[in-house]
Length: 141
Image (cartoon, rainbow, N blue to C red; front, side, top):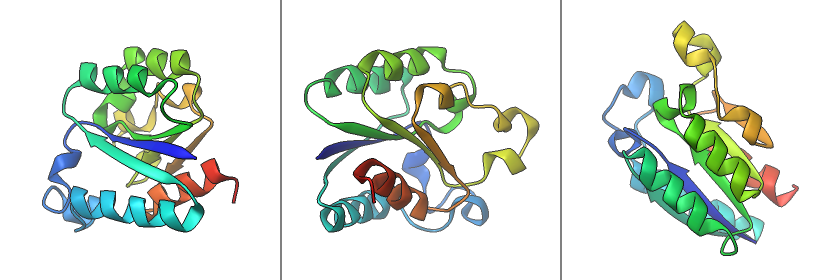
């Protein structure tokens, strides 16, 4: 199984941006852990981060026929990007949405995900361990 882990806007600042909310692990550390977790689960993991909505959409389109599934932390795009929702839906790849914090317990505007209906599952509030949980969901373990 081959999985693409996508991280959206501001996730390049992990480790320094609001560590009390997002923890102290950097994006590089998260990506490395995802690769290690993937190896443990028999999954090949590639990772991509961008602050640009269109670049995420392009990567989702490019994943068709190249990957078996997606993990996505869309950042703030979660709450308003119907274009991202449509790209996930059009790709027809099993996708798990991940949020490091529990978005349902934060500001009201963060509690709604327009991405979730296009995904097979959402994992939130588990810190970076949520990425492992997403990989486990995709692997069926």
